[in-house]
Length: 143
Length: 497
Picture 1: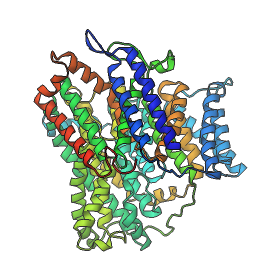
Picture 2 (picture 1 turned 90 degrees about the vertical axis):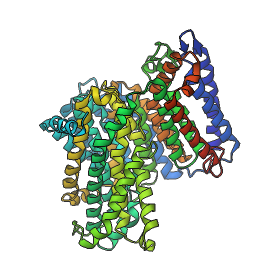
Picture 3 (picture 1 turned 45 degrees about the vertical axis):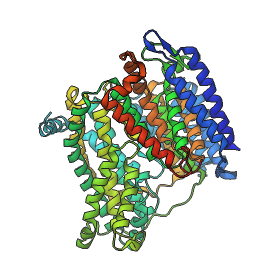
Picture 4 (picture 1 turned 60 degrees about the vertical axis):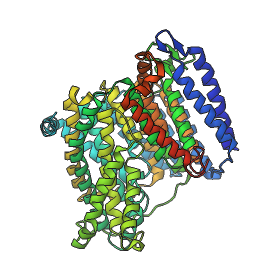
C-alpha cells in the first residue's frame, strides 16, 4: 500500500514537473532553454513511477508501537525545534528539545536528561559558536 | 607537472602548524565517526562542512579528506569489539574480526585492521600521486561534449554498481536532477520550480539534503530499534600482529590494496564495494574457505586494506575529472565548489598547492591514524560504552547546527527534516540514496556541459556522436545499460522492485 502510494506520487510529481518545465521553454534561438533538462528528468521520474506501479509492491517492516513513537517523537521534536528556533534561540530550543527526546525516545531519567541536555547544548555552543565562530540563532534574551 | 616536484610542493604547503592541526583534528573526528555506530563519514562531513568555510581551501579540504579516511580506520574497532559496523565499509570486518575477538584475539584483529589500513592507504596515495596527473593530462583536452559524456558514464557506472533495484536507482538520479534544478538557471538566470519563494530562489542547499538523507534518516532508523549492545569487556592485548598473522595477512593486504584502489576509481564503487569484493576474493582463492566467518585473519586484512585503498582511488576522479563516484566524494566536490574551486582537468595546473596539499596530507594522515588507532584503541573502545539513547540527541543537535550554519536560514532546517523523513521512508522501500546525491551534485555541471555542447554544434545532438572520445564514452555507457537490461528479473529491475 505504502509503495503503491509512493509510486503514484512519483507519477504525479513527474507530471507536475514536466508541465512546469514545459512552461519554461525547451529550445530557443541560443539553443536549449531552461526547461529541457528538467523535462527529461521529469519524464524519467514519471516513467519509472509507472513501471514500478505495475510491479508487485514490497511489504516493508514499518515501525509499530514504541518504535513508531520514538521515530515520530524525533521528527516532531525536530519540527518543534525548527519552529521555535527563530524565537527562542538555539540554546533554549535545543535544550528543551533534547530534554524531551531523552525523556521520551531515549527513556532516560529526569536528572540524567536535564544534565545531559544542558551539558550537550553548552558544549555545542562552545565548540561551534565560540571556538569555530559560527553564528547560532539567539533568543530575545541575547543567547 | 612532475609528480615528485608537485608532491614536495604539497608537503611544503601542508607542513604548517595550522594544516597539521587540521589534519589531526580531521583524523580524530574521522576515527570517532568510524567508531561510533549510527554516524557515518558522509553525515560527519556534511555536519562539519560549514566549519571549513571559515578556513582556507587547503586547510578545509585536508580536514574533510582526513575525516573520510579516518572513518575507514575507526570503523573496524566497532566491528571487532561490538559486531556492529561503525560505518558501512566495515560490515564484512564483523564476520571474522568479531570472531577473532571472541577467541581472545581482539588485539590481533585490531592490529591487523590498523596495519592493513595503513599499508593500503599509503599504497593508494602513492599510486594516486603518479596516476592522477596522467588522468588530468588526458582530460585537459576535453570540451563540453566529452565532459557531458564522462558524467553520463559516471552516473551509469553508479547505477550499474548499486545493490537492489536499478529502476529505483534511475528514479533517484532523475529526482536528483529535478531537485538540483530548483532555483535560478545558471545559464540565463531564469527561475525554475521556485513558485515565487525567496527561499527556493537560491536552490536547495546540498548540506541540508545530505544531513537529512544520511544523518537524520540514519538516526530515525537507529531509534526505531534501540537495543543494548555489549562491548567485549576484556583488556585488549597483543595489538602487534604475530609472525603467523603477518604471513597470513600480507598477501590479502596487497590484493586488497590493488582491488580497493581500482574499485575506488570506478563511479559507484568506493570503500563499501571494495571491502565486500575483497572478502569474496579472499574466500574464493583461499585453500581453507571454511575458516572464513570463524576468525580468519585474511577476512580482516583484505577488506580493511581494500576500503582504505578505495578512498585514495575514489578521490582521483573528483580532483582530476570533477566526477564524484560516491556520495562522500560528491560532498567533497560540493565543498570545493562552495570554496570557489572547480575541480577537473585544469585543477592541478590552476591550483597545484591545493591538489598536492591534499595528496601530501593523505600521507601524513595515514601515519597519524596509525598512531591514533593502535595505542589509543582502548580509548576508542571506551567510547563504545556510550549508549545510543544518549548519543542520538547530540547527533540531532549537530544536524541542526550543520544545516542552519551554512546559510543562517531556518528554512534549511525544514529541508533537512523533509529529506530526513523522506530518506527514512525510501530506505524502508529499498531505495539506494547514493545516486540521488551524486546526481544532485552533478546536475548543474551536466546540464551546463550538455547545453554548451548543443550550442557549439551546428548539427545539434549529433555532436555527441561525431567526437570520438564522446562517442566512445557514450558507447561504454550504452554497453553498461545493455548489461543492466540483461540482468535477471530486469527490464531495469535488478532484483526486487
